[in-house]
Length: 329
Image (spheres, rainbow, N blue to C red):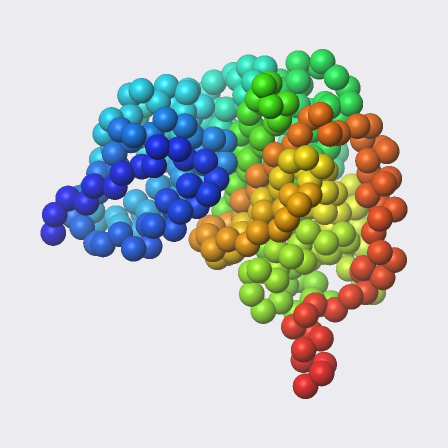
């Protein structure tokens, strides 16, 4: 066997990243792999997380081979964000080492057990701990310039982190964020190593899901959860009992001029106010990317009320497509 040189794309941004990750499946078995970053210029937050995890997994799946990277010294921003050390290359910062600034939050890795322990020690719900993390990220990106913007970002980020902690059975998750002042846009990317959305929703007896695409489409509907569902005898109570609404509310906020992406298993979907697109993408866990247009958001309470008012009355009672198909046979 010979060396296999893998050229990393010039722009690692969303679709280019998906194509790059999908290409791993067709890479032939070799004794040595060389990842060449010579042409790479841009790596966005989603790609920082996704590519670093997939490179780490690719290395584990080919444990008998050796791995090298070359021509990466010019990528100082990804190195500062913790990208390279995320997959074992000794260049730049460790995830969480950099403090961030008013335009970015570097890669951070959190353990779910640490969050639950902190909540237990403080006698609070884990949602409170995650809300503190979300508030910190929002304040870094907005520098407290606008309470309206900060509150919406805080809510959106918190709900995604809550969803991971409550449903994914993940040991850890990573996230990073970036603010682009010229576009008035914030990107927040999160990646966990949990059981995936389909398996998580399988706890809901009202759903019968045949594939990952069905799971994604149902996962972003309001009131759909593996832990809370119609007819349930003992439902969670209290301030943090609104399980099943986080993905829906957040995706609708993102659709106001931005976009919402989620992938799990072998499928992903991208939602904007204009369209819904489907992707083939292998995800080891669940990935979420929020693109929020700051110019299109307004008071959080008003936004949430409007979204709540638009929820169909019978949305919680609808059977899944596969269930309907079985009932008609």
